[in-house]
Image 1 (cartoon, rainbow, N blue to C red):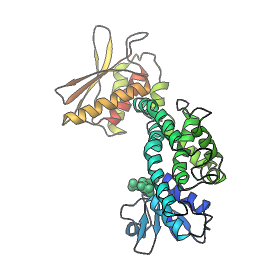
Image 2: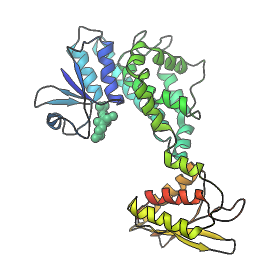
Image 3: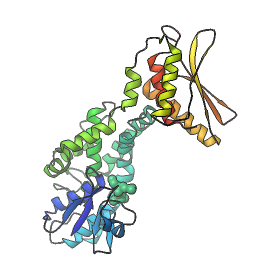
Image 4: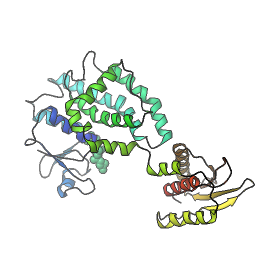
Length: 338
Ligand SMILES: N[C@@H](CCC(=O)N[C@@H](CS)C(=O)NCC(=O)O)C(=O)O
């Protein structure tokens, strides 16, 4: 049996873990890592939705959806350790638990993971993280290591890859907290990261760790704003000209910043124009988020519901325009289109 996957995909890890835990050999099931942007020709036929994992059932027929594939493998290799359970009740209850863990636990963990690049969203996700642990505490069985007892079952397998994402992320972003040490959830998480299959397949993979680190570390452009100098720029005309030139030639953006001043001193200003109110609000949302994430704040004004004026300058210790202001203007301009 051939299964198409990509590296680091949590849904593919579910299927790979299934074959390991059921002890299915590579001669029985072989995995083929593909590039989603440039998949083999027959992949389109097998799965018109072009998602992985996908099983090649025949040259014309594919089977997608990780949970469906896990069940298919469990039944095809029924003589090996049954991950969904021994009878119809166990199987149904485990599928029910997979749904509940997915909705009541995994969602909250992944919200933290995916919002790492936005301070506003990350703060909201962290506020709800305790719900994941409270829910998991209620769902976990008493006095057992895993949902599957002493061995991983389908519930553990479907959750574990997402926990691995979260586990590496919380090692890097220390705002992400774990459950209290004396809880079942804490013990469960420890058991997952120490499981030899999970270690071998996911956590010991240096490339996986590097991938997660890249996902959750502050983006280069945000670092650039934060690390820019706060010293006032003396030749502002040239600096603003250079910024506008870069926006046009490097980023192909039709955005011009102007140098103006008021009684306190100089500032730079541009006007973003939108065709509707919805676009304008999205731009404001991005601007506010960029301010919080980069810890650098600007003035802005929404005129006529379709034009956003943004003024950037530094007030402390002296009024003026700094490298940090220009770096902020550059990032803002590359994300908001006129
Ligand atoms: N519900 C699917 C989700 C699979 C999925 O979203 N896989 C991602 C890779 S992590 C994918 O194929 N993305 C390609 C795309 O959406 O175009 C499952 O459980 O298998």
